[in-house]
Image 1 (cartoon, rainbow, N blue to C red):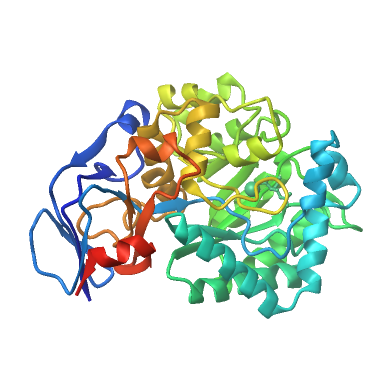
Image 2 (image 1 turned 180 degrees about the horizontal axis):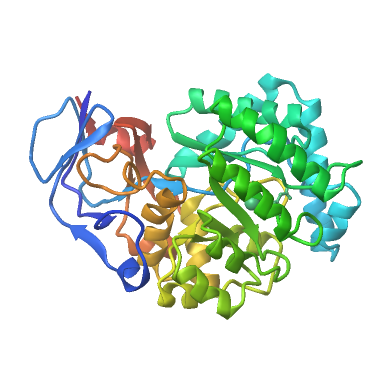
Length: 413
Ligand code: NIG
Ligand code: FE
């Protein structure tokens, strides 16, 4: 099928190719009065007024690349609102974790749910994300916490992937919490020696992640998993310096990890390590917001030093029950000091880099997957009005996967 988005006020995208660093993050490519023409699943051309089978009149609108959410904990099952209530009364996340709530609670909920219940819950989340403009996202394990249960979670992620229009990339985060009866080293050994090789062989993940904190794992375990990931051709990622400064970001940069995520407590000397590396700094302001953390990542320093800065929702039932990348962009601008242009690049091209998809998604350019968000306002409204329903339509893989009721008469075929 061919589809064309005609007559938008502006079409805005990161320019160039690959990850974007430093001042270039604020330099968007902005075009006026051009059509975006899609053939099958890809963007065929820009600017040509070519006939198409389906056309959307985008006058008065801004066309953006579909958002890329490079950090989620999908699929999970059930929420943990009561833990949030406890936290809002002053109980710490770490205390809930030590009392076998938190990640252990989600492990139990996943264990007790049927495959179909988990798939349906995942589809509901993916639909909410699509509605908010997310056309590519990450799935992760980490609520299984045994070899079999982690493989089950990864297989369920693959099932959800088959059923959604979005592009999905899957990560093995078995080193998320230390299962009862294991030491950190024993579980890491089993993950490295048995789980990851099986998951890789079955094509169930393309990256490995680890949670390095006092309540979870240490850098020696990250090193062990990084060796395994490297030998199997998988990318390595790390939940870094979220609750304390564990020197994880500097470690990730020196070891060539694909990304270091969270970074609330990352020190200024690690900023230079990240900037000198190809390790992306993934900022997750939704978790900072939900946990009411005063300590924020050195976001402006990271951008000024030239690090690859990306954004994700961190969608999970504990620390970030959020689906919307525009909302995360607004948080990034208001609480971390990003400029709206930087937030857009972080939520598209750079987030695609984190998932290894920078050649295929995250930009509006010929040859890229036809993933587009049609916003019913100028770009500056997106971050300015985070709770407004500004998305009129979403194109994913060349299909109109969402068209708001009042946008239906803009479609013609
Ligand atoms: O990215 N803190 C570690 N992992 C998640 C939270 C997982 C959970 O609480 O279920 C995070 O914040
Ligand atoms: Fe996370």
